[in-house]
Length: 220
Image (cartoon, rainbow, N blue to C red; front, top):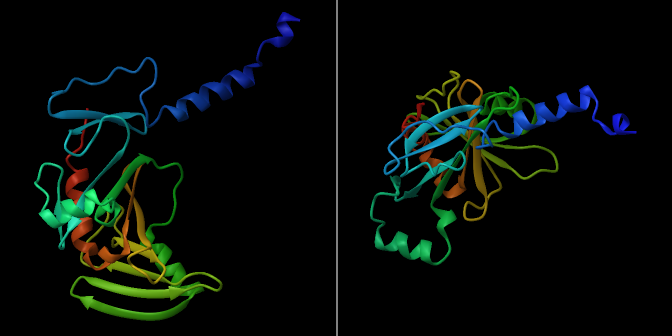
């Protein structure tokens, strides 16, 4: 009966694999953190590898980072907020100015947002297309029985994978709806962004600041 209660080799292997996957992006028992300057730096684990970055942006617990966007420019954690921005945050409206970045294991290959836009152009109704300014295109599409989407393409920039950074914003009210995008930042590591649609027309500049923040990380 004791032998019958033991897990099978297959179950043991499945448990080991499940634990390995769970620990790709978080600290687990037995992990040894890399050496760093604890007063200024944090270590985060992404796809099983350690990265070190400034505490100003990385908390040492997970792959969340970001910055605030105010009057068409970034505000970092080390800067003093303008009075109007501080009042907005105190009023509980911090998400209106937050550019949220989520790093983690890229679980499976997926088409870039730019390629998703090409597919949307093929399968949905194109309501409008416009060059807003040099380096920034806007597309509006709508699929049947879905909210319209506004896409912004930073035509003069390139993601690590080579495609133009592309942002998708669902809905027509920028005060309520959010924009999202994602790309492969490093082999096996994806970066996903989320912020209010009201900032969509600043997409090239937001992408450049995102790239700057992410490149503050170095491999341990």
